[in-house]
Amino acid sequence: MLLLALETSCDETSAAIVEDGRDIRANVVLSQIDLHVKYGGVVPEIASRAHLDTITLVIREALETAGVSLADIDAVAVSHTPGLVGCLLIGVTAAKTLAWSLGVPLIGVDHLSGHIYAAAMCSDEPVFPAIALVVSGGHTSLFACRSATDRDLLGATIDDAAGEAFDKVAAILGLGYPGGPIVDRTATVGDPKAFDFPRSMLGPGSLDFSFSGLKTAVLYRVRGRGKRGITPLDVSDPQVVADVCASFQAAVVDVLTRKTLKAADQAGMDTILVCGGVAANSHLREAFERIGADGRFRVIFPEMKLCTDNAAMMAVAWEKWQRGESSGLDLPAVA
Ligand code: KG4
Ligand code: ZN
Image 1 (tube, rainbow, N blue to C red):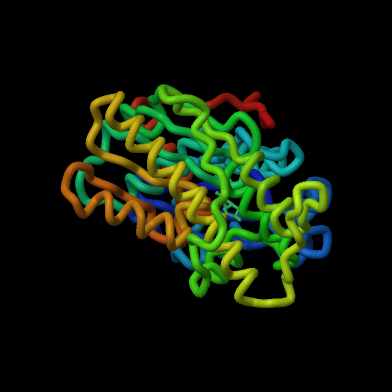
Image 2 (image 1 turned 120 degrees about the vertical axis):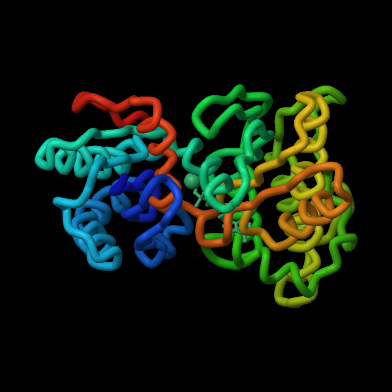
């Protein structure tokens, strides 16, 4: 089955051609970072207009890369929730138009299912049942998964997502946008023990997350708090910036790994999938690789290019196709 998949939920315009749910024949990802960088974050209206300008080109390039034509496509998949609604609408409308004009099924999929499926695509063996940690710019959630589309939510962030905290800490340090990859790189020469930033666990049994206190702790440490006798840090010193990045990252990774292990223990599952944009973080990958190495848990990551938003992971539609499920032309884009 040859699937054309689209992903436009945020600031990446992406189209992929995937055969039988696994074989990625093309995965074209056009990032809009250059358009948003001067605002320090994604501007929804600019993002949706940019999707509109480029979606046709991106689809054409995916078809060319895969060496197929529209007539070869058996189904069209699209992520229709969650995301920025104006952005989702572009992908959903393109997918509906193509599915209708080609006379093939339209399959709407949930963006988070796509992130989880990205890990399953990268494993030669069946991965489910599994605990999935989905950690991105918009989400930090733990799921007990029977498949990528059939799952129970065990916990989620009550405020900022982990990726959002990375982006905000980068902004506090004046490092630019998007912050995750920059903080990751900067932290490599920093001391993770230089600053003792808080690890918010929200009570002994909780599988929820909170990163806003950590972000505020970084802000106060960097800018100083006269009343408490905390002097501002010299952020013109690259070593100080590296130490803040490494210490912040250590706190995030500590909380993510501890909560994920707790979820696996509570659910009695021994496979852990680490998915979403923050799964590209080198320190997080090392920490989970160490957990995997001691043999108690099998830990699976998507390969790097499948961690951040891309259309190939929307081949999760294959699960639905096999169950005979498809969507109507009234498929909504849901924020
Ligand atoms: O999954 P994704 O592409 O989009 C959402 O669904 O949100 O994730 C984007 C997030 C951004 O916050 C970005 O800063 C973060 O993932 N990110 C990283 C790294 N690469 C991307 N965070 C930490 N370390 C990285 N290497
Ligand atoms: Zn995402």
